[in-house]
Structure formats: structure tokens, C-alpha cells
Image (cartoon, rainbow, N blue to C red; front, side, top):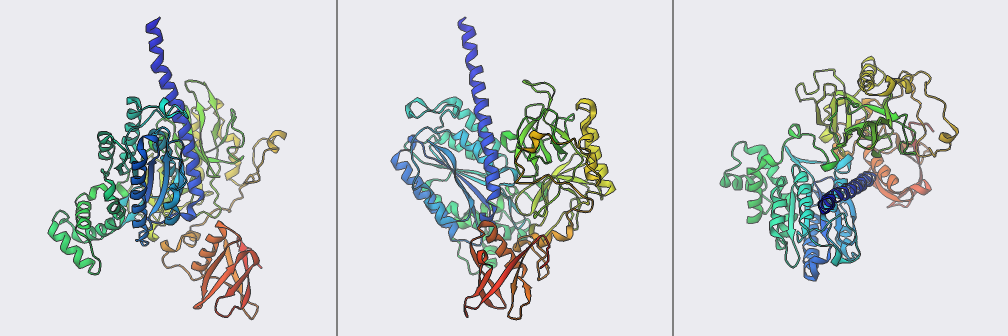
Length: 617
């Protein structure tokens, strides 16, 4: 009996770990959606996720040292607005949560620790799982400097003494540092470190340097940074920018220190680099393989979530379009609309689906250990219809005007499906023959892809192939019967909606009935790009939301693209806000709530109006 009881202990621990892990994963998915909704406040430069250990083991001295070092890094970021660092902050202690979402609002970020309640346990594993909410599903983007690829960076302030993240207790003494907690943390750090650099800054009374050195050493380009070196870490991106310029001109001389220093002086004659800056730039040049080029970036799972991974040939392929299936039991998560398969979950019989609303969750498709023959979703023939996006998950694409990736797509004319949009300018695509990679869609005006006509013969055949493949493992093989007429512009064969379904709140997005010809055109793509990614654009925007101003002759005039984008950005943030624009060297304040703009010099007032969706006035 004693032996039997003993064997139950690790089983219970494993179950508790799995349950806690899933809870934090689900929270990370929610946080990713929050990051996406707050894209308007993102910086355009490299992304940094700070994980700040606020547990009781840090001690008062450690807290103060952490605050000073954290402030030094953020202050350094603010000195280089051209870099435009993107910062998110997670605290880990009595509360483990995102304290700040990605932004470049440095003064606000510096004050984020003012009201934090220090103390409690140190569930660092939970903090790292939560941090994936800043990576997945377009929550942030990879930054390019020259030919260098700069992945999101982690900066951990901690004493490296994690506690069991599966236990929650208000009493600090009941939650102690354990070997199991260290093992879980190290596994998480190794998984993240395959792609992302992790910089560890030791703080606290007695930091575990062995664990912190392992975490940083196992990551791609990370290292230990002592608190007095924090300012130098804040210059990392600034120095990387210089290294990227050097590498474009130096070719094979990137290990010659004297040549690097000489080239630095010639290329940046008015910039003073300290000896430490020079050391960092030389190290970056000599380790340029850490910053792989765009076509070398391989699709990676978002840590344990394994997003974008295709593991089961009997399940729908990534990019397949789906709707709720026969065993649906998840309320209105789909908003009564279609979605896209973006990954096969690690537990067999489950899929990752991104709905057209942007939400992401996991659904049953076939068998699993706990439930047999359950199908929450089924593959349908229904194209992705865009609103104001330039591209979105589920769009069909072919190679575009700037394609330079040989036959990764299987050959010219082949179709692929977008499975993820990674911020502004990059997307992941799954091609028909199964290859998955990342491509430019607007980055520095480059378009490796163009969006397909979803009603073309080739697109319809692509959809039907997805249905045929999925039907092999679906009851009765009836995948297409749910909505096949949708893409063909025919009356939908969808069953009548029950009274219960009619009562579901669909106010956020009505059910979309597709009509042939109503699809996104590639000619509209460039008009929706941010100004920094536009090349050769016309002077007048063709945006779906175009603002006009009335001159003294009563004529309505469109704002320029740059001014229209500026107004739209502020309008999206707060319709009651104001924004300053320039017209013919004159500055005007646009008061959107009153439909007016005011000349800041003459105080003359004129009307403005917003025209939506190409409407007329």
C-alpha cells in the first residue's frame, strides 16, 4: 500500500502541472489579442519583454537596484527615438501579469513599478508562459535592421529562485524554491531561447548565478548583464543598427577589429561611440549569424502552444477554412462566422483555430485521450473577406512582384494560405505542398505575395482540395455540405438557424453572406500601409475611411495620404480626440467630434467630414 500511495504522488504533480500550464497558456492567448488591439501604441523598432521578479526573496536592496537598472534602460531607449523601441512589462510575485503592453511611451513605462506590491512567491515559469502572449498571433513583430533580423528580446530581472507555479498561497513561507520549479523554468527558457535572446540581470540578496547563466547562455544571443551595465544594454539596438550598416559594406572583414573601427569612423563621422560601444558592435559583427536573414527564419512553435505546427496528416491542413461542426459546445466563440486552422495542438485530436474576429482557441477534431470522435469544427468552402486590413489569416496568396525565394511555393502560380500575420509587413504562409515560411507583405515597400481572387477557378479548386483531404477523417465525409455554395456566390445550403442560435449576440460582426466579386484587390494594398512602408504612393488616399475638408468656396477636398492616416489613427484611438495636420504649409487642428478644423495661425474654422467605405457625399 505504501508503494502504491507513493506512485500516486508524481502522477498528481504531473496533472497539476498540466492544468496550471494550460491555464497560463489560455491567459497568454488572451493577452496576445490585447496586444493586437493596442497596435496603435506600438513602437516600430525592436520589441522587448521585461520580466520583473517582484517576489519577497528579492529583498529591499534588490528592489531598489532593479528599479534603478530598469529606469536606466528605459531612459536610454528614450534617447534614441529613431530606433523606436517597443516595450512590454510583466511582473512576477504576488501578482503575475502584464503590467504594460507593448508601446513606446517611455515616461509611463518608467513609472509602472511605483504602485507594485512587492512580495509573495516567484512563479517565473508562469511569467515565461504568459510572456508568449507578447509573441504569438501578431502580438508583436520581428524587426529588421539592414539585412539583420532582430527577434523579440527578453530581459529578466530576478534572483533565479523560482517557486512552484502550480501552487497559489498568500503565505510566502508555504511556497518555497524547489528543484521541480527550476526544471520547469529551464525548459521554458530553453524553448524560448531557440529564437529569442534572453538577458538576465541578477538582483536580490543571493541570486542563483548558475541558473541565470544557464538561462541566458542557452538563448540565442543572450548573456548575463549586471545591474551597473544596464545603460549599455539599453544601447543594444542603437549599436546593432550601426553593425547592420557595417555588415552591408564590409563583406568578409567582419572579424577584423581594426577594420571595423576604421569603417565605423568613416560611416558615422559625427557620432561618438565609446570603447564599450565599439566592443559591442564588433561582437555583433562577428556573431552576425545570430541575426539570420529573412529567408533563413524557420517557423517555430510559440513555446508549448505549438502554434503553426502541422503534425497529423489526418487532420485539416494549416490554412483550411472551418466553421462550427456537429459537436460544437463553445457558445459564441466563433461569432457565428468562419475561421482558419493555424496549428495542430500537441494533444492529438485538437486544432488551433483563429476566427475571422481575431480570437484564437483550441477545438476537438477526432479522438483524444478523454473524448472520442468529437468534432467541434468542420472544413468549409468560404473565403476570407477583408475589412480595413491589408491582409489577414485565411487569405489565399500567390507569389508577388518582389518574389525572390526560388520555388518555395512549389512553382509560379501555386496558391498558399496565410496562417499568421506578424505585425506590419510580414506574414506566414502554408503552401499547397506543405512548406511553411515567412514572407514580406509591405515591409519597406516589398511584396513577396499578392492576394488571390478567391472566386477564381484555381482558388475554388484549392478550397475543394482542403475539404477532400479533411473528409478522410470526418464522420460521413460531409465536410463541404455545410457551406459549399458560399464561395460560388450561390444561395447558401446552410441549415436554417434555430431560435436558440438567433438569440446569440452577433452585434460585433454579422454573418457575412459572400457575393461573387466582393473581395479584396491587390491594388488597394499599398494605400493601407503605414507611411514608413509606402513607396511611390499617389497624393490622395483611396482608403476606406477618407477625411475631407471644405474650402472657402464650398468645395470638399481630400486630405493627403499622410494626413488622412494620421487622422484615422487618432480617430481609431479616440473619436473625441483632436489631431494637428498640415495643408499647404498651414497647420490645422482637426476636432473630429465637432467635424471641424481650425487654422492655428488665423483661427479660421472650416468643416470636415468622414466618408466611409467609398461612399459619396
